[in-house]
Each structure stands twice: as C-alpha cells, then as structure tokens.
Amino acid sequence: MSALDLFRLDGKTAIVTGGGRGLGRHMAEALADAGARVVICSRKVEACREVKESIEQKGGEALALPCDVTRPEDVVRVVAAAKENFGGVDIVINNSGATWGAPPEEMPLDKFERVMDVNVKGTFLMSQAAGKEMIASGKGGRIINIASVAGLLGGHPDYMQTVGYNASKGAVINMTRDLAVQWARHGINVNAIAPGWFPTKMSRAVLERFGEKILSHIPLGRFGGPDDLKGAVLFLASPAAAYVTGQVLVVDGGMTAW
Image (cartoon, one colour):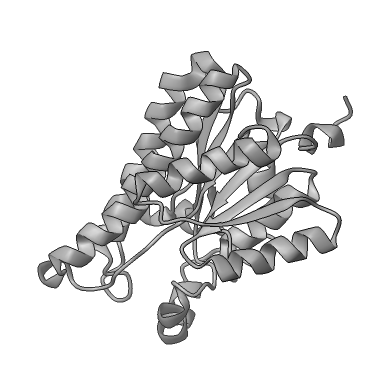
C-alpha cells in the first residue's frame, strides 16, 4: 500500500451528523472525495439533500436523512438505514452541535440543558448505536467526535460566555477517551477533533463583533477555512490513523499553543 493509498476510503460507509451545512458539509464532502459512501443527517434534511446531490454530481454515493440526535429512535433509524442501503457503518462523524451565550450567572437552565443534550447526549447516542453495529459486524470502525478548543480552555469573558458549550465539549473530549479504551478490543478507534475559530452560522455573530480581537489570539493570523478540517477528518477516518485512538487533534491555527 502506497502512502497515498492509506488515505483512501473506498468501500467504507460514513455517517456525518449535522452534515448539511458548515463544517459538517466540508467533512462529508472530504470523505466522499476519498471514496466513502456518506449518510448525511440533521434536523434540516433539505440542506442534507443539497449535499447529497453535490456528492452524487461528482460520482459519489450519498443518502440524506432527517435526524434529531437527541432522539434515540432517530439515531437508530439512521444507523439502520446506513446498514440497509450501504451494508453497514464504518465511520461516524459526530458533528451536530448547539450553543447559547450568556454570563454564567445568567445562563437560562433550559438553554444549558439543550446544549448538553445535543452536544453530549447526541454524541453518545450516535456513538452507542453505531458502536453496536461495528461490534456486531466484527470489522471495527472509526468514530470521530467534533469537540472544540472551548473544551480545553475557559471562555474569554469578553466574547466567549458559553459555559454550557464549553462544558459540553469538555465532556465530549473525555467521552472520546473512555470510548476509545472501552472499544479498542473491538477494533474501534475513537478520536476527537477540536477546531478553533471557523466562520460558521454558529460563530458568525461573535466573529462579526470581536473578529479582530480573536485574530490577535491566533498565531497564524487567520480563521479556519473550508479546507482546514478536511485533511484532519480524512486522516482520522482512514487507515493512516490505524494506531491512533483516544486522542484530540487540535486544529486552531496555534491558538492553544500560546
């Protein structure tokens, strides 16, 4: 196998939650470019259908499905559909996420709970359902959880008052480590990616207001772009990362290296 072949995903099936827009879309397209069949799911299935059509226009295979990752029945249905249409599940990208901004002393409990539900419970439910399928197949697999540098640091009080989001991403990071050691015997590699600041629908308002200040905290002097997560997700999903599990790959332009 050549070095470049290590990054091929031909014959593999990947599920990408929240794959209809933003970072999820970029990662879904990267997996398809490498040869994977991709199941794109989110609550807004229309956006997922657009990504499906884009992948198919380039000769790939894809399936678009509605899914609220906080609902176990939705998650189980997506995993079952992946098995029925493509023969199984080899890769999962847990990308669906939510946030809410408010000072900690004013954070509404219902918003805190919603963020934890989507980011932590949703990640667990999809990992659990897909993990069961991977174990049953005997072929192992890859689970990649999209965390955040917010799970490694406290939020800057000037522009990152998101205690629920930060706490949830810290939980995702430690969940990643636990699943990695629990499922290693089944050949399931579990890793996380911790992005820094990327312009997305979720971050747009903060970047518009505090962009210059945030940039001053990033050694590379720029925000992440559409291609900056593609290589990271492809590495962790592919045979190139066969000996990597329980790790957090930080993609932040050096922000956490100060």
